[in-house]
Image 1 (cartoon, rainbow, N blue to C red):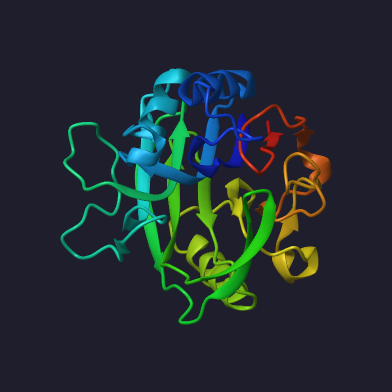
Image 2 (cartoon, rainbow, N blue to C red):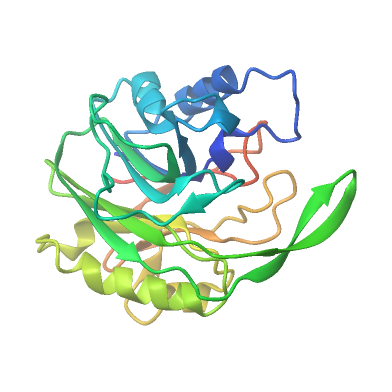
Length: 267
């Protein structure tokens, strides 16, 4: 089973290219990865900035996968006005016939049948941080407020549980979110802890904090920024498996996203 975690940057090519066919580039990248299960972060659901597509659903089509789900972290675009998901919103969209408002969040696509989907809501940090973004060729700092997060879990019919998440960029707050997900993972009815994998963009560049005392990292690879990776903030974790139990597959930057995909194969 080939498992991939990838922060997609809503399908943006890197370096930026206004003439690029982003949909075609994304489809080519997904086909190249040949994943059985892929966890996606920073994906759009019918947002104008990415062409009004259901990105998770499109990726499922590219993979030939019947099972997919999108979990909105916020309603609207993070580049514009947005709001927190409410009780009346679809918190797990896994059917093209569902009517859901445009949003931004995370997703999972699986060629292996999914028997059930689960979501854990995570509050955003009450404070934001100053972050640098390129503007007219120069880095400028902007205050960015945090938004709610979530973890999305897929129970597969082969007995595995795959959990995908994208944690806060606010230091220490993201560590507490990770702690909650680790506790939640063991409440979803999978007795064999060797068949639980937690992955995603954790926004924590410190392996000791990511692993904690009971989890192991399955792949060591600098993932950010994709064109000149300096740190690892994308991880795959297991309570029982070790890196020696899986095959880690590395891909160089090939033109999409500011993160490199992280990929393993397990028997």
